[in-house]
Length: 263
Image (cartoon, rainbow, N blue to C red; front, side, top):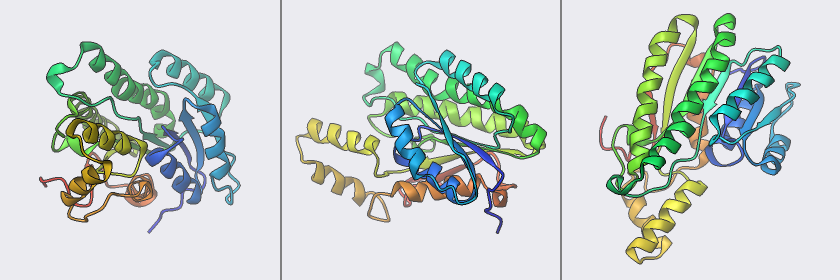
């Protein structure tokens, strides 16, 4: 099985913590040169120091806030104009919008979430796809949510936007597959990240229970009876980014311990 990513260059969004960070580390371990994208420069520098360089890679980062799509476009365009190498791998990963019932959501919440998830993903794809096409190799992996298959109660805005990203992704897969570019979605379930901690805390406050009680209820709904480690989700992401996954295109891959109730 060919998992070797030496000679491949990767962009990883949201790469200073959680699934994004774990994905960046795993890509570097397989030989890829990684460019980190996030808004906290101190954390970016710390993650940069953790990346494997045994294949001679020189990793770097772009400081950018995904709440500012126009700035993202400017920074990516400037980076690509200064960097001759094509980017072969794009991991689209952004923290989810605040929770709450969809009926109570403000219009601005939808606009903000669409900008951060759909619009920024699209900006990155538009900037990188020509280089992928010329190389005859491209891997676009979108980290979304199991809500693509089964909406999650209390995450109304997130459910809506995640579904839009999934359909955008499938359309891209149909259009770009002929150029050796695959587009797939990884759908994490309950994963030990800051996002999950926030969800647990919110539910505990609402139900007037302890965080531990909420976690036990959540785990009981997972056949594996536990939360995922970020590295376990990253393993699926990195496999889809590898040469071995060249004929896997346009799919949703739940990494949820079996929690999603549909096929």
